Length: 125
Image (cartoon, rainbow, N blue to C red):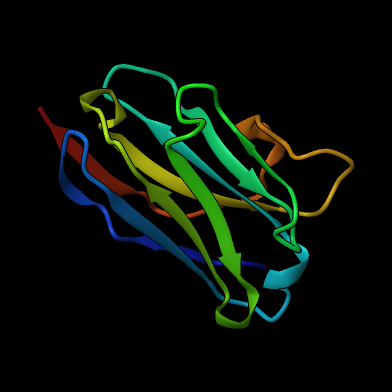
C-alpha cells in the first residue's frame, strides 16, 4: 500500500512558477512509477507527466512539454512537479499517482493504482 499527499498548490501568476510535491508513505516508494494528472472544472482528468522509479526516464503531455519538469527523490519518498511559464489554462486540481513498474511509462489514469487527494493550482492572467 502507498499513501500519497500532495502539497505546493496555490495561486500563481501567468509566466510564473510553482512546484508541487508528493510525499509517499511506505518503504517501497522507490519501486513505483510516479505520475501527475490534473482536472480542470468541467473537464476530464488528464495526464501531465510521469517518471520511472529511477528517475532516468520521463514522459510529458504535449501541453506542458518544455514548461513542466517531473522528478523524484527516493531518499525523501517524494516526487515533484516543477511548473514554469504558467498559463491560465494550467488551472486545475493536480493529483499525483503511483503504479507498479511496467514496460512503458503509463499515461492513462486507469493504469495507476494509488492516488493523492489533489492540490488546487490557480493561475491568474
